[in-house]
Structure formats: C-alpha cells, structure tokens
Image 1 (spheres, rainbow, N blue to C red):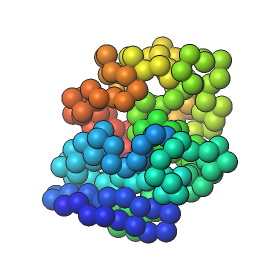
Image 2: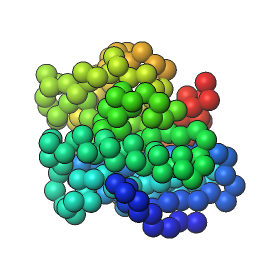
Image 3: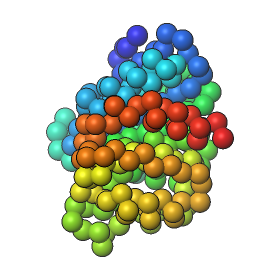
Length: 210
C-alpha cells in the first residue's frame, strides 16, 4: 500500500509492506529531481515487497520550489530533512533503518550520518557524486574519515561524477564497513540498477545486520 505522507520537514510517499520485517528505508532524490523519480519509485516498491517500510521523500529544498538545483546555503536544512525522515520511520516502529539517497540526496544523507552517527543502521548511496563531472580535483569526500555508519555504494561504470576506481579509493577512507555494487554500463541515473536489485538487497541487509 502506498500513501502520501507529510510531517514537519518531510513530504513524500510511504510504502507499507504486506509482510513487514521491521526494516525501514528512508530514500531521497538528487539535485534535479524529486521523490517521484523513476529509480526511487522502482526501488521503494521492490524494498516494500521485501518487507521494508519505505519512505521516499522530498528534501526541504524541493519542498521550497518545484524546480531548480539546491543552494549550498540550504544544505544544512536538507540534512535536517534527512534526519526528520529517519525519525518518522522510527516513530512508525521500524526497528532497523537504512537511510539512502541518489546523488545529492545520498551526499546529504551521508553527511548527516557523519554528523550524527546514531542516525541509521546503514546507508544506501546511489551514484554518490564524488566530484563535479571532469573535475576530480574537487572531491566531495572530506567527511568520509568521520563516517561511522556502514554504507553500500551503488555506482555505474559510466558515471561522470566518479569512476569505479575513484569510488574504491574514496571508500577506503571510510572507517566503517562498506560495500560497492558496480553496475556495468550504467550512468549517473542508474537506469540499470533495478536489474541488480537482488544483490543490492542482500548486501544491504548484510551491512545492517552485521
């Protein structure tokens, strides 16, 4: 069952599983999208079928305006939105929670977890934007050594925001348990990611339960 959800800083869609496992997933979007992005809808439904209570939600910057990228000055508020989404799942009695996001949403989710380690049991980082396209000298990994939450990175081999080798090198900076699920031929939009869902789910659960 899917229904609209709105509370404080959180607006999105709640996916109720037919057979709940006690697991929850807070899933958000990238800089140019919203919670109705096809990738998020596909993953949310797949996770709900597997027993997760899933909240796919808009970050505060998208609630403020329907189009356009986020402003750097609003990043802290977006991280508050991440925390609010996780709190909403906890209030709905999800026992083990993964916080996830695509691109910008994943970056803000990871930063929120670094700032507040108890935030979630694991992270699902879809197409983490390691650097702007063609600008590897501008890494977005300064906080990685402070990240204590287990994290699964899902990354396409044709992603201009970071090569797979760059992702592997960056992940090595993180002191917590990590994993990398490489999607051959996929770009930043990860259109081929749903085909890898069985492996994604099992690897994420392993991180959550370890």
